[in-house]
Image 1: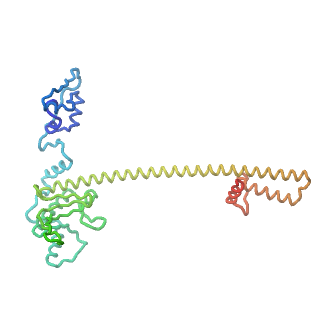
Image 2: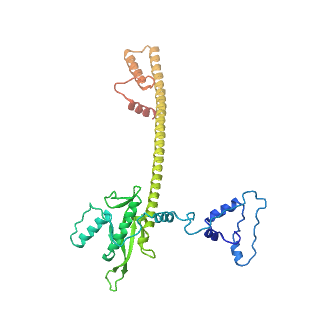
Image 3: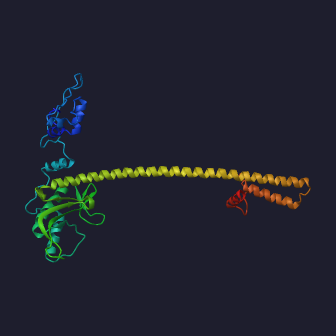
Length: 356
């Protein structure tokens, strides 16, 4: 089979992708034609056909499903699958009537506002939710019918409507994901034949249903298939986009939790490091202070010994030696003697002087 038909033709005949066929061939040790095989065959050149493994002891039966129209196992996009599912629901409001029948409240509000505008009795009321319809008068009723059926289909699919965070609306709400929507009429640009005059825009009667805003905008318009017959696909698109948005939000939530945990670990580590560095600095500082205190103590002992030997240990010198020893005890971190006038900053200053 693989030597008589290309992988592309096989994927069109059977419900398998190129990779799926290759995996089956590897599993069952079926030889696949080398690169260039089909080009050589096209120009009647010699091609080498690899033989099957004669000692293959695995399962020798391969079941392939023929690709057919309407086959649910066919390789289709999620959008096509969901569209067909909606279309197959006989209770879904997909048929657009010739006249409005029990119009949705949004359509009622829109129709009333349009009537007031036509009668020059229009006072803007932003508290009432209306559907955005930008079409010429001949296409207005058709737009209302499309929008009414579209809204009813969304409500049937358990979706709702609300204003967005900017108090604009109504928006379609699917699993807490919002979608702005509107319908407009395409215009055809006719360049001016005169210099310095602007172009003229003429309505074409082609309706466009817009979903979303900014870079997420998606539009459907009249073509070989009228907009009326595309509602199931549009709703399917909205539901899939909502699912993608929720998945993205979940990824962001997990990523945010991960970042917060990493930041917490980093801060805890930095706090431990800072505390360790502080204690180490204190250790080295105390060691230096103690070392200097010992040097000064030795100096005072020599002064006292020499004065005793020379019989010059006066009361004045004794008082000075007592004062000096008190300062050494204040300076020595082991003795930790308090001083009425000096503090730790003074110790640091003394160390700087000693180093100089």
